[in-house]
Amino acid sequence: DLGLFLRSPLLVLALALGAVALKIALLYPIARFFGFCAPADALVFALGLSQVGEFAFVLFAAAGQILPRDTLSLLNATVAVSMLATPFLMILYERVLAPRLARGKTRPVDVVDDGIRQLIDDMFETMYDAPGIGLAATQVNVHKRIVVMDLSEDKTEPRVFINPEFEFLTDEMEQYQEGCLSVPGFYENVDRPQKVKIKALDRDGQPYELTAEGLLAVCIQHECDHLNGKLFVDYLSNIKRDRIKKKLEKLHRQQA
Ligand code: QAP
Ligand code: CO
Image (cartoon, rainbow, N blue to C red; front, side, top):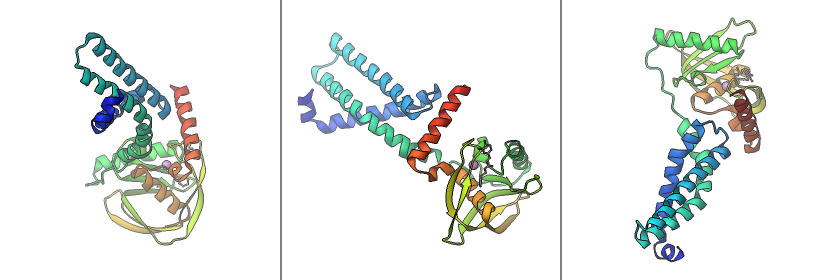
């Protein structure tokens, strides 16, 4: 109803935004839960279901005349505006909100006890099994700031980083072809500062420091990124990242 929209555009917009926020908050996770891994699929699912629901309600309300005329026009206008706005807000959610929500959820380790050491041992097992050279606790779904690493060929140099922190010691960048257990099968060049200083606790809870260059510098930055919810593919162009994401989602669906 255009008349109403012209009379109270702010009310309609506010209601529409509320409706869209509700859709995203409720339907999007449900869509993901039911296996719509690709954002586009989840979007269609959430949009479709919510629009059907809203239209059904509007029709029902109109047929039964259970609502005053003005309220009904308000509802119509809200449905129309929210329908237009939903795709844009979904994109906003996917690009801005979702990565932020997933980020920074790790907690530092307070006390390095036997439980933590058991976790570290399990992480080494997972890493050596992969096989990999580095693993962050977030990759095994533990949201604590722990990294394990072994850059040797024969599993003889296990390294533990608890609550790791690093600072760049140079502006010089170096390119390295990185891979990741969480992005299996994909390897891409990433630029990172070539020299870093690392502070961390060892598996006895003792603080230590070291200066890292080469593969160690690359790996510790890669693993610390994991603790902050970031993957090496986040350094690639949107096109490259989306292509990798789609291929992984396809693999995932085939395995399911
Ligand atoms: C991070 O990565 C890293 O694709 C450690 O199918 C990588 O251990 C730092 C892995 C390169 C610096 C340079 C990857 C395992 C393991 C895969 C890893 C895969 C199985 C990756
Ligand atoms: Co990784």
